[in-house]
Image 1: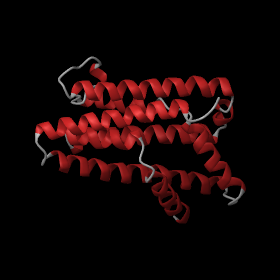
Image 2: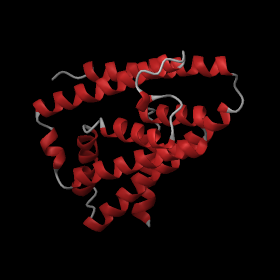
Image 3: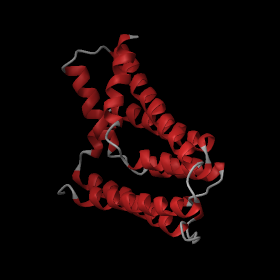
Image 4: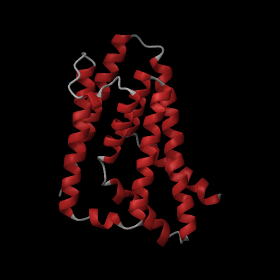
Length: 203
């Protein structure tokens, strides 16, 4: 239980670094409600669990190679920018990519979360470095590491569920034109994440 709580605490600190997934959950819940926002939350948490598992088995070492890193950065950045543009266009009633619609069905929400969360496999390297540190410097045993990882995933569920709730509440009190303005702002910020992710590190 101690390692589980540590995982939640550590994960919550990481969650405070607001990123595109947080904005995605907030915007989805604001547009289509809390329950559908939770679908996105569970998809993102599942992908986190998948990437944490891959990092534990050593896939992060493969992705440290520059050619893979470049490829995945480009893919991730393009997907984020496409999604940002889709949100902006959707605010004006233009839906060019149905899977990235700002008013999606439950099926599309699942696909949105899956595509966007999986688009950043460099996350494996990030988790790999954290977990390696816990193994080597904090002397975690294998079972302790598993429990710690469960805490990390739980922090994603807790934090993003709260973001989903806030988004759904806000969505009930703002008029349509304000909602459209917020959609445009969110779209611009997500495009920024994509561009910044592409150029911030030298290859």
